[in-house]
Image 1 (cartoon, rainbow, N blue to C red):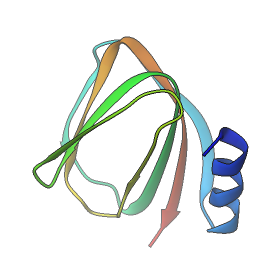
Image 2: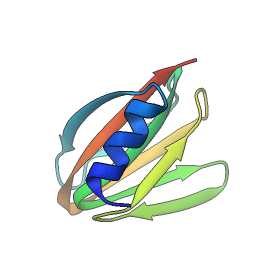
Image 3: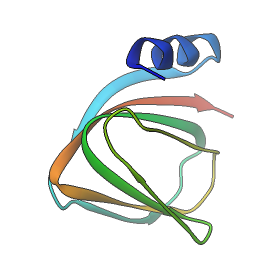
Length: 89
């Protein structure tokens, strides 16, 4: 999936969209969100730990997480830029 296809899928499925970034090595300790989330990585790397799984995403990768799922986020040494979609449940 490319960026255009990802953004189209967000619009089609009722997600709000924004571009964001996190600094190199940043860690978000365990938390959850009251919304469904979808990510598309533009640059860098982001590792997400959730439900006993570890998912590492790089440029062109997507990640989906349902609302209220506890997870941790760890940014790679290059930082990360991404498109985030959120849809309230």
